[in-house]
Image (cartoon, rainbow, N blue to C red; front, side, top):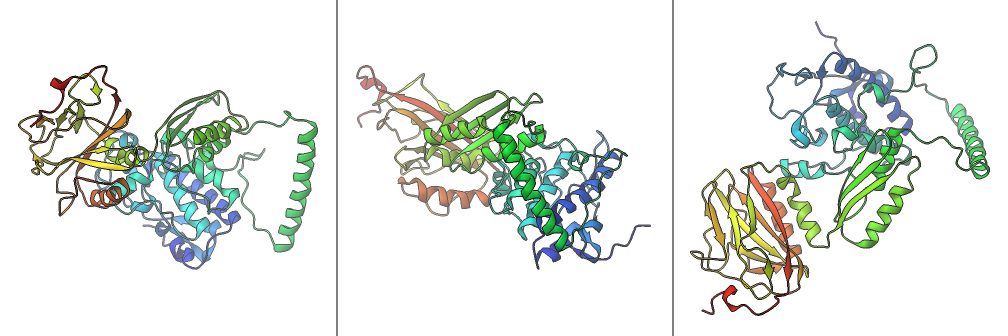
Length: 455
């Protein structure tokens, strides 16, 4: 026998209004307490969403989580109720449910979904977290844009939406307020308008006192918790365009920031923002500069390249080094499925040269695990390297169905191509991609034998 729960879903309520910040915190406490009990019984919900949260009488303090129909046991070896396939709604699934970070779904997956629910409650609508497999994965590579969420809620929600499970709070129980001296957790209370106004006035006086105290006793303020530092670190590394940043925070508050940024000014701003976080320990920066258009290309293909297997797509220089004036030769290996191949050479000035298919080698379907050399016979087309020396980018995409209905021009604008490529990739059920960066050097001496034949 199951309880009959009468009331509106959170989805229905959000269609009329958003929740106030205080209501969002009370909803967090209510849901976290219930889910903590389920997790401690070894049950992971896997489909936390506004549709599955009922508010009897419209009251967040009586919220109930429903629909444990796709719940899964957290104990290794226990069967899931519907098998190991994907479960949950696209807009509210965790990165692990989308196959990222090892695909291991545990209680921290529900924590991520709860973060998305709280964000939706604060906004009155769900965040844009993708609507297809490729866009769902892309949206979960970093903390989403929380700039429209009330400032007081951003650190909390950012900590729940850390892409890597280990960077989130360790359990639902950790989200709840600390117990009182009697061992009970304080219940969220509703405040009348008069009491709320009095409370705000009192808080203003307290804030002024703290500012004065901080001025006279600098350094005497207690450092924030590890969770607070983690949330601040997430905020400090978000909001950059054409960038990808990953962070880790150890128990001793030492941190590591890795990834790429487009400009040195961005890197300086990042260093200043991270090192100024109160309570943070030593910070190791492993952030490289990656200018446009390379950064945009890598960001688009990263969800596909991050899922590469040992038998995935591969591409490499077929020569020991690359010199201006010499032939471009690439060693290519097709992934584990019969594939249509698309190999592109990106120019730092914003143009892309389509190496395959091309005007003379239009047939780009290859069998699984096939190996060949691009730029050498029996293929008909040969290219001599030229243009600016320094870092160069070649990409290799393998898909089950052709990306485009008509052949694209041999050379075109990167902006135009990436827009079309993004749309084309979203329609693919199976795809593999890899990026190849190499250094183009100025030739120490002319070497005609290494160039394409004159004919």
